[in-house]
Length: 556
Image 1 (spheres, one colour):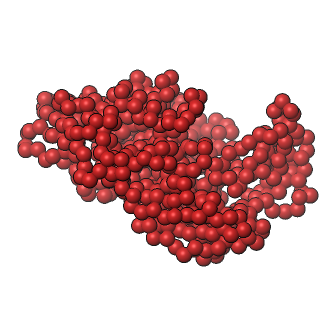
Image 2 (tube, one colour):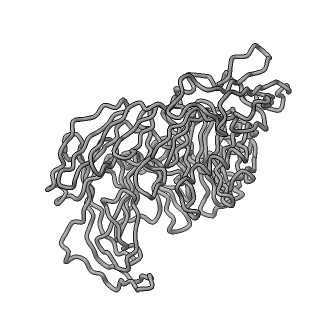
Image 3 (spheres, helix red, strand yellow):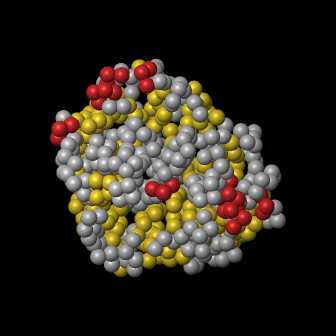
């Protein structure tokens, strides 16, 4: 963190080990203990920056002990007084993807070594932001880490065959994990399964036995959002099923249509009391045979498997803190934690949770359409084209929706209620609304072509091609002044961090080849050569953590 400078003097950042070592001891990304300084000296009068642009004219350079620094600095910096504005950080804590400071190079502050999650198909969703801690299963324990130190805040022992949820956010989903207030854990043999809830401070509710008869009537139990247990099952007589001409060949090819089938009933109950909270019925609609592969509601992974047969009753789900996504033969639906069925019937698109509240249903069946819905499911606006909110936001500017029109040639901004704000040339059909910081909308087109647009007018404030650092933006974070991009370089399989000044687009720092390679290779531990490593960054209580299947690292 920066030390307060005298007026007009350099800003000095001390990058050192922090107090008592965490579980793995303080060390930098290159495995070197010690400290480094990064000095920001004023070499410009800042005349080329806007009046509200922070840190005008600061130039960053590393002193000789740069071996302990995870990245090199190549651009202008951001004034430390803005980074340390406690009121600004506190205001932003309600949004996902918020980190106290991403304007200066990041070092490894601590490391926790151990298994994160369970199972072989690790995708990063096993880790969740539980209030102000990072929580995850490790073997038969639920472990919480203090994001500032890496120390275990608490450990909750679980029984046999444990599973906790809701799931976190995969790095491939492009959204930031938002804190949950409760996690739900099931454990025990099938006939003696029980449930507990765990709060951010480690408080555990009294175990509640799950009635086996409920499983027969309503389906197997799964951890749900907001302290719930979810159950789902097919309802109606099996005689309603009509396989039609659906078939699968030994070659693996499936064709034809299942013309009739049974509905799916989704039920939520209180994890603590067992009381029913809501029930939603999703009607069956005729389905292509390829949708009717083997799947299981009880399987947390939410994966389909081909076994050479058509399964008219098969369905699964992906459950996160924001949404319950049902999929399978003849059913595809998205339900909120309050039991609201989103989207206009059978989905031909995808529902996203908006960072500023509400949901967006993006229809991919035609030229493009977006239905924005409030938390209670009420339709706010129905728009042409694909429109999204920002992945991360600082909460300063007006709430904004951004997207291309149905032709993909125009980029449009709307107020939260769908009132048009501006309309400019898109230059590329696919636009990602990465961040809204101050008066700037940070947008990426064609993977890594990033630009900053004036949030009020749509005018281009800056443009930056970061394709040399990566082909795709996986995750985005902000401290309210800078934007940190976690990029994926497909050819080399590398993950790399790049920090941009949100107001000017200048590169504040970028991760070195050596550091990016080291991080990526560490995540390959235990993987086959063909398996890509999963390495995700998570913001927890203003701290940035790096999570892989075998370790958690604190960056700062």
